[in-house]
Structures are given as structure tokens and as C-alpha cells.
Length: 138
Image (cartoon, rainbow, N blue to C red):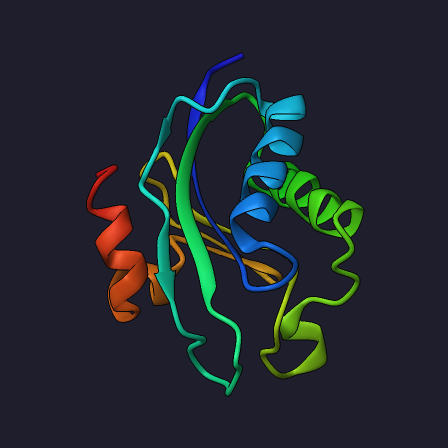
């Protein structure tokens, strides 16, 4: 089985956001193994909706043998375990959240399915906060 490089962006703006992203990393490591690289934590206001709460964001990198879809399944399981029951895409709006985990890159492939697009174009090309912390890794 071949190893793949999985780059994720994590964010939280509820219940001690810094602690929540660290907790998510620990839960992800239970499946993917130790995180091989991580950015600094970056604090920024909500984008796309009004919120009094500030987001803590971080980029982390793992090696994995799982497919992109299986990685997404793991990520959604971690989000549910941490208390996030509904994805913003399902609700049709952004809101405060205990954790948000996005696949930004999977190796250097382009991948498109009904529920997953890699690379995550908003983080790679549009959002300045994510471009800033991604640049530390890439």
C-alpha cells in the first residue's frame, strides 16, 4: 500500500478553540498516526457570517494509506465525536462551530465527487488566513 500526504485545515471558535483543535489533532492521530507537520495557530474573525467569537485555525499534515473518501469519513467521524452534528453544506449556512476539518490537499491530485473537492479551492485561492498558514507548510 502506498503512502499519501494529507493536508488538513482545522478551525474552531467555540469552547476554548485552541484546545478544540488540539483535541481534534489527537483524535485524527488515532487513525492517521502522528501528525508529521503543523503550522502556527492563527486567530481570525469569522468569514461569511457574523459572530462575536474568534476562530483558531491550524494546518496539519498526515501520511495515510486511506483513500480521499475514507479520509473524509474519518474526519466527519471526528467532527461528530466532538459534537458537530451538521455540516455547513448540509445546513446551507455557516455558523459557529466546535470544530471544522477540511481536506485541503491529498498528495497533488485533483479529486471531485459529490461531497469532496480536492484541492479545497476556497482555502488555497480565496481565504487569506488559510493561504497564510498553508504557506508555512507548502
